[in-house]
Image (cartoon, rainbow, N blue to C red):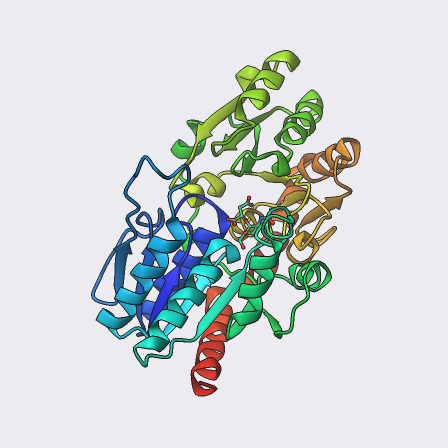
Length: 375
Ligand code: GMT
């Protein structure tokens, strides 16, 4: 198949999922065209089966807001015609599903029918999409998609609750390429981050308020009172400065390192002992899955789709949002001795196998095939 993928190319779950999906589809013999405003961060190799087409939005002083949807839909029309793309898969409804629908209507004028598959990722439904400013257009474009998928059962239920949806929503969970997470670390890599007697605790996110990064620091503060430990904070975002300030206020700044955005998540996770994801809401929690695939148990909140990924008492523990004491107690119970930690590490890795890329990507292929045959 010739598949066009539209996504956000920056650091963030939906872009990562879309990129990994495109790469795997190309490995499986499909021709994949990424159409977005920048080359996706995890898309390193462009080959004969993977193409990238940049959407340019020139600045024009008349516009207070540059019309990205317009540029995207024009580019989609041009690329579908030029490369004979057969199906468009858009990740994150806003504004991608809307722009794709406009492209579809324009292409119909030229006698070309292009089906649209929309994957809902989370905030496009919950925090942003259901806001009255966007809701009408988001609902419209979901209902106009030829197929709709959601990354968890929880997100599907949220979508049905928040919108009037006429389409079937297929749950196709996020996935992981286990081969990228299985090589062990060298002692020298770990030694650069911590002493042998210290546990390494990690958090990775975009540091937006929804991630509750202050909770990460508070849980770590409780951990390090009893267990020698270091915290690695990976990512960039609006809450980073306040997190740094909190570390300073608690007197733990020497034990916490802020690494910024990284393309080497898998390498960092390989020498981590515990991952903390205390989010306010999370449709899936891809970062938790990445941690588990690297054998890192997860302390998380029990919100949204996280309980579909992190299993309480098996791959880690779940607590109510904001329950710092419970998260701290659970974290300490995992880290307290080597055999317990080893057991949780093994279980986390086994749980991650349920989301093996080779099990999930064929589900998208079936959806593409069914959608194309219904045209
Ligand atoms: O978590 C974010 O803020 C980024 C956001 C995105 O769109 O990239 O992540 C959402 O999609 C990810 C991939 O499907 C999910 O793993 C995240 O749980 C989801 N985030 C939220 O629901 C807050």
